[in-house]
Amino acid sequence: MTDQRTDPEQRIAIVTGGGRGIGAAVGRRLARDGMAVALVDLRQEDADAAAAEITAAGGRAVGVAADVSDEESVAGAVGRVEAELGAPTVLVNNAGILRDNLLFKMSVDDWDAVLGVHLRGAFLMSRAVQKHQVDQGWGRIVNLSSSSALGNRGQANYSAAKAGMQGFTKTLAIELGPFGVTVNAIAPGFIETAMIAQTAERMKVPLETFLTEAAKQIAVRRVGQPDDVAAAAAYFCSEEAGYVSGQVLYVAGGPLS
Ligand code: NAP
Image 1 (cartoon, protein in one colour):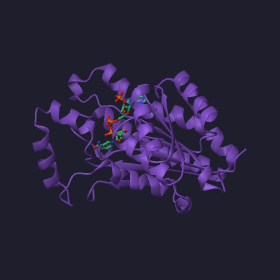
Image 2 (cartoon, helix red, strand yellow; image 1 turned 120 degrees about the horizontal axis):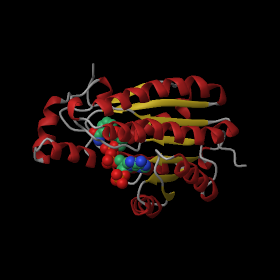
Image 3 (tube, protein in one colour; image 1 turned 90 degrees about the vertical axis):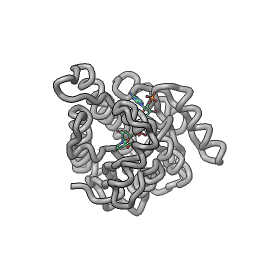
Image 4 (tube, helix red, strand yellow; image 1 turned 45 degrees about the vertical axis):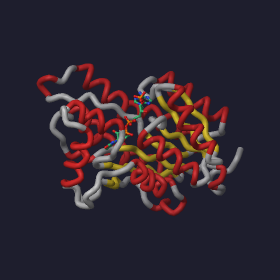
């Protein structure tokens, strides 16, 4: 068994939703920091494309197709990572979807789909990976929450899921801390990805206008980029962050309250 506790170069990370957007940026960053990275995404071709970018830059990566909300699919994905790269000890629960609607128009399917990917997905992935972390006596889990956890019109399902991620994070931090595992959450504000393009489309606002108007409301007067979130994830996954656990870091270009 390789010793991931003492040798950072041996560490193996899984990033869910790693095929694009924030997940792909986190994968690139962890690979740059020396980890082997498995990018888990719904479509094999998306996961492979993100992995190819990392390997082209000299890193180690594989793409793995899986649906994080499905128990069997998660077991298969984590098993494949173990077989192809080794036992994973770093997990970034990033996969996410939006199904926005005002409460009176929100369907049960929209509710279940969002809770299923974000919360059930993070639960299934964390439960599968913690075994390897406990075996190694070392690990890092980073959960993607959102500023929407504080409430956002049209996102009852998403804000409930993202607030749930914060409680989930704090509880795992308590349970896994004795085994050398830290668990933290990142709550991004407005980050320029396909998810934002989807929101602009729903609101019938041209993307450029949506971005410009959003930037005016943000303290640092710009929208966030996936690398802004990747930098925070890299910190939580680092050796130096070993005494930081159960925290929620807002990466939003300003304070939120
Ligand atoms: P994105 O561009 O939409 O990427 C999300 C990725 O997750 C996609 O590749 C998607 O695959 C994948 N995915 C969806 N359902 C999945 C499932 N069941 N199993 C595996 N993979 C799945 O989103 P993003 O903006 O990078 O967001 C990443 C995370 O940050 C999400 O949790 C999001 O809620 C959170 N966040 C984003 C923002 C923002 O402003 N962008 C703000 C706060 C929080 P497909 O492409 O096949 O759908």
